[in-house]
Length: 316
Ligand SMILES: NC(=O)C1=CN([C@@H]2O[C@H](COP(=O)(O)OP(=O)(O)OC[C@H]3O[C@@H](n4cnc5c(N)ncnc54)[C@H](O)[C@@H]3O)[C@@H](O)[C@H]2O)C=CC1
Ligand SMILES: O=C([O-])CC(=O)C(=O)O
Image (tube, rainbow, N blue to C red; front, top):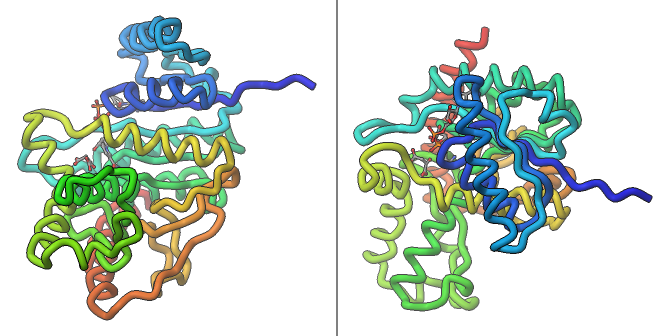
């Protein structure tokens, strides 16, 4: 029996794509193909070679190549799409919709030719709508088209809770539902530290501040950086999702999935908790929500629906 390494293609070799490539290689999830536009072929090759030359020092075995040729993505086990533009201070993620929808659709046209059996993980913003654009273009089953938002939003939320209580991040549990926008829904009732509900440990007003900081967490980084947006935590989130899929770990993670009736929504891509494994999204968990939580989720779903309708209009 010949054992073949997995192949992970990352389209978009910018800040998030390149950082995710290194993290995925460090985890030895497989060989990484970093793909960008022809005008950036040499810088892309240069980034890949630089990372490869870190491998003897760090002791990871993974081939990393840079290219602008989709042939090199052929038969990838996983494709991660980070291609597109990032926002600047003063912009919302939704301001990127037209530019990035064009890019994501053109990338997906190529991916479906060379890797029709792959699973696709979308990062480009506005990510709920870009996951819809990818799904429409690829024509793949819904379990194989997944968006990343909740792992990152939850990571920010858990970071702030750990800081607040001065406890290990490893002991914080919680998650964020809804769209990747300022009305996302951190679920306080399902959040705990070492199994202890945070509502019994942190005063209500402080929890409200943590929830609000989480909602605008992407913007906080955008404002601090001055140009471009976050990439270390987004790349770490992609690497965790890639690991769940490529190792068939069946992790329970918040992902952007196509909802067809779950939570009362139809034909909508939205962040919900799911089992992520070798078949992509293997099961969606439908939580019981209070009226307050459901109306917050409805508000977030309405925002996402609005952006998706812009993409849908552009695709017709
Ligand atoms: N969903 C999420 O949680 C997050 C989403 N993002 C989004 O991810 C995207 C990428 O962010 P960064 O990596 O920071 O941006 P970046 O500007 O550093 O990199 C984007 C890369 O995409 C490439 N690109 C553009 N058109 C392409 C095409 N047709 N084919 C292949 N490559 C193409 C560019 O040349 C560039 O290298 C942005 O839209 C950003 O808003 C970023 C962080 C978190
Ligand atoms: O804020 C942005 O534009 C990038 C992003 O989605 C995040 O960091 O959450």
